Image (tube, rainbow, N blue to C red; front, side, top):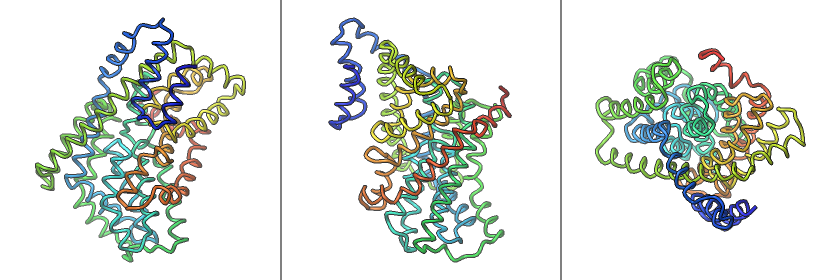
Length: 425
């Protein structure tokens, strides 16, 4: 109880999540005097000393290099040639471009920054409201943690000891499903607000010309995901390939990656991945303490008392994750709560890969809900609007996400079809 009380009090006081988790871990150990403090140090060290975490840094760097190396612009050009002429076309272009970029970067906020920074000025020039533009960029960026490669999926794979490659496969169909639903939400709002497209009719010739100009950009997700799915390389090796590919294309093909841009990419990567690694280490110590105090068993008993139906339990867990995601950072959420819920859902016959996809979709919703929604803060700065305005404008996209979560829970085959097809049981 001391651990939970310290955690809630620190969150309520606005203490940074790393310090909150650290305090909630250390204070009970001091009070009880039973568990040695060396446990925290050992767990922290072993937590960050895991080979798959290299992939997180790699995909963050690849996304940064693609943003400064000209790949992002080519992706947007191809998306615009496909759907830019329809009513509300620029909103659709933004979401489609985010889906392409998500298949490279693995990060939600990075996707918002890369695509939103280019698309939003054009949307505003064509009469799109700033709050709606920010909401579109934030929502499209949320796809960055579901469409593989995904940094949260890597963390889930590490914590749950499941195949990261299978998680990547499992996230593809749900990611495309939710992407289509977001496009539909954007179209409905665009129709209601009378936003127009580019005015250019669809032209197969124009699409092919854009594809030829952007072929190097379009090859990136094909090489990365194709290599993983075909078993040519592991997710860690895929991250290294993504970095090399982004550097090569940015320097030698598009010649847009400059020395200052390269240094800025390294700086962003160091800041982001450093934060991730520290959170992982501290949160794993917290999770270890939860296990020692038998919190997972107590939660399992409580939920089992409500229902033994796996579908009902999954919906209850999803509701809990969505609520707690409004004030808990995604990686901390995965590391702390996966050991709590995973034993329960496995005992009910739920596939851990399927549960991982559900977990990440719930975290995706957290990226769009204040007060912690990271995508909202990135988008509001780009669009120069208030948090209240973008939070209101993002509601149709949140509704699309939540509606899309329902079939993902009800039909495990949406998540498991590709892993079973390509890798067997």
